[in-house]
Length: 101
Image (cartoon, rainbow, N blue to C red; front, side, top):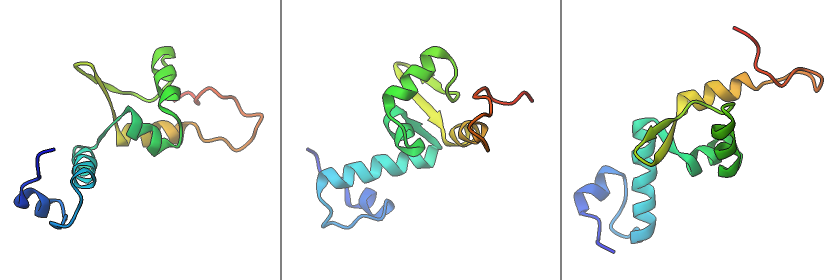
C-alpha cells in the first residue's frame, strides 16, 4: 500500500505513527463527512440499520432520498436526518406511512 504523504496526514490530523490502513480509513471517513454524503454502508451505520435494509428501501421507493453517481449510491446526511425524523412515532398504533404535508 502506498504511504500517505506527510502533508495529507497533517491535514487530516494524523501523526506519522498512524498505521497505513487506519490512516486510509480515517481519511476516507473525513472526506465523506466533508462532502456531506455517505455511501450505503456508512449511511446504514449512521441510521443503525443494515445496508440490506437501505437497498430494499431503495428498490421499494420508501427509503431516504439518494444520489446515484455512476454505479455508486450516496445519501445526504441532511436527507437521512429528515427521513428518520419522518419515521418518528408516539404510539404503536400510529400509521407507518409518513404524515401528509
